Image 1 (cartoon, helix red, strand yellow):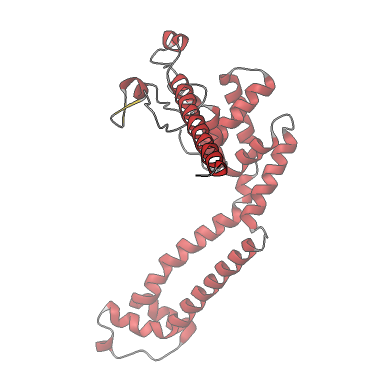
Image 2 (cartoon, helix red, strand yellow):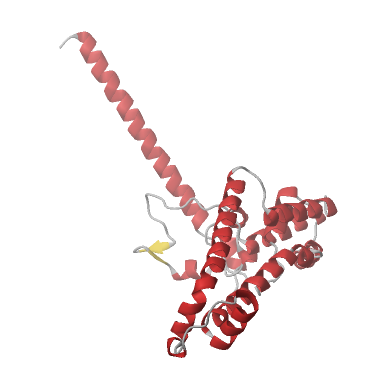
Length: 273
């Protein structure tokens, strides 16, 4: 074997060895870091209580590791780790709150706003929560008026659906509607003995009406989808953005992004927490 080949072989073995050592070093350091962050400190364990359990994940959570994770035994959580699970949004870390808020969870966005109020006003949680509730009431001040078209659509849809049944299948209503608006010939009595026979008679004039209404709703939904694809804001999104802008202008001292996200997911009918 030539001297040049020997040099190349030795160089390749050295590079491979260095990469392997570096990889082992990274895994070892990562495992130590994960164990340190995943295990409650002495102060955390000392200060833990049923109301305030020890922090199981430490200041950060690096997820799954290639080595041993003391939080799990045989792929099952330990008792201490289960006890430390947060049960409310207020008990979660900032990273969890921000992730859930980015996914659009209303409770997480409200919690993010509470913490932003705490940091800006330098007040405790309970006081910041009261301010957050005041901000929510200010955001919902004209929401009933904004939802008026939705209320009209809801009442119209429910009424039309309920009225359509007797207009198609109930003979006294069908016959009266025929006398007032259709004036078509009434079938023989033996052809109107059941509600299905009444429906087959009334369907002669109800089919065009109901079919046309269904087609209009279909085309309206398609048009709305194309508006969203082009970047136009339908009425609902337009009003949400308008409320968010008004809320940001009303409370300029707080974070604009957190405040606007809170406004967008705030609802007229509040869910019990």
